[in-house]
Image 1 (cartoon, rainbow, N blue to C red):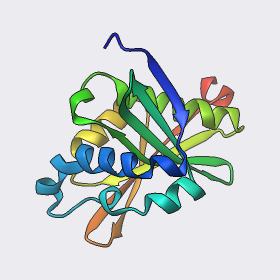
Image 2: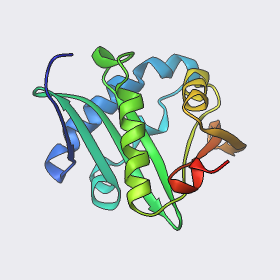
Image 3: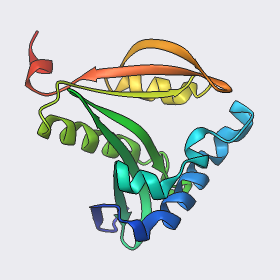
Length: 158
């Protein structure tokens, strides 16, 4: 990956590209969960307006994105997606670290996310990055696994 990395915030003109990247990146999960995962059917016109979506380009190619939502005292990672051609190259970790930096800059002391219980590889990745298990809850057609991580100066204390 010698292409230059460019990270920028999504705009309304990016919606079709966002939708295509998300559909491609989540396609492997369809047989696992038995349906299209929620990010594949999300309203990205609304998401670009209401949330923060940051796009990572390698050269001229959209390689990954992360969607975050500011909550009181916390940042929620709504979606992280990496194009299939770039999976396994650390870009998901890069985007998660970016979201954590945004959360710290916003003064938050923790960050949270959720994933489908059947997406066990995602849970293992998040746990390896310091996210702890917070619980499960039924979600239409699935069970959501909630995870969070302390961040910022308070997370450095013993």
